Image 1 (cartoon, one colour):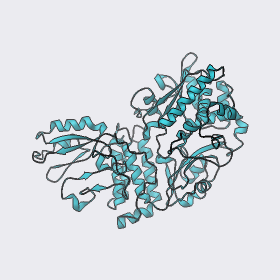
Image 2 (cartoon, rainbow, N blue to C red):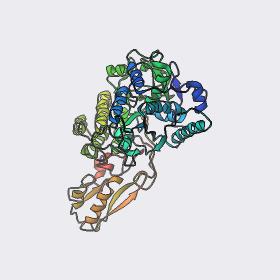
Image 3 (cartoon, rainbow, N blue to C red):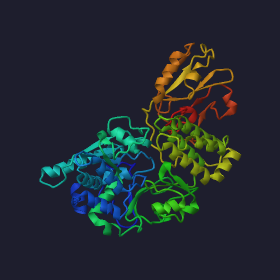
Length: 548
């Protein structure tokens, strides 16, 4: 059964990656072979030549030339070593569904491309890493079983081992270093220093790492040949591309379209309201105004001319009914909470940036404060996550200038935050902690604020107020409790919204402070602030240094 989170498939132009999906829910091996035939093995030079001829690029976001990846792995292997082919099916990006769609509905096209590359490189195995949920993982496991059964029955399927690895889905789970770590049984976060998978990846071996659509495109290129492959699309960027359209689209879908298609035509197909803008490239992407969106072209070159990057083909029109600034602040808070917590720009800088954005929504902040926070994280992180978040925020400041003016003048634009931008469902087992104080014991020593400055603030009299502590800071929080000279602190584990229950649904404000929150200056005087997560998004004052 196809889950609701995998949208339907639409097409503009010929069906290639989505061929047959209008007739069946999932293409099993016999149906796939009827449509695409059995791939003819190619040697390495042939694959590299074909990829170069159509300038084939990775479809995971970075658009790195695929032929160069092949050559880099081959050079690293040498004449006697081993290598691995790794399929990145860990989308991570909440606004993208193309990987889940391919793995759930058309897994054999992805596996064909990966096996072609593995045979050309003499790889030890193909590893498919997925965070697309139980249905996607079950589909690819079934596909592997179908190939084994075909061989048992006398078929001619490749005998290169295929291993499926399910990993935890996070925003950063699809980053190359994070994915390799997860497959190797380590924590699935970026390694903190540049490590090329082509040199050292799965089990320390040279690894060809590309995403699901890239391998599916390789299978099509081998099936059609460069000349037929280039019959659609633009001369510089031939072929089709998968686009995920959501947000303000009445009929959100994964769309297969030739490169060179107008963005306006894609939006019209999904009956999308543009509103204040269209987000291109996902949550590390950029906003296009409604005017620019009308003439923008779907291609790497076209998006560059429009001031954006195509990335993984994510298109999110905002619609008319939601607060655009509030939506941007909501995503910024999510991105701050999704980092690995291993460097200063993420651990401290991104929460500050989220706080500044939410203050802007409330009308109490300033654009200059947001820009100062951006300067504190740009080009300073251990991975691209801080830079990508900064890019998203700066683009929002430019795109929503008039909206920002309304918030600063009136405290609101008059529209609620409807949660239009896709966000993962909150996990009820997400562990957080809160610190509680016995006021009859607290003597205002202030040691807790020195030991845990990201999560403890002192008032003018030296008494503490506390922010929710994420699980990865539990050790430090416990140490703070143990060292309190008045024995006035205790630590309580919470789940869901940080208060022992499931996270509430999104409210009109992305940053709801309960009773006496810090943005409510009048109420703040009545006692220590207490904050709650809203819609699974923890505001800066609730997660303090949760980043990096």
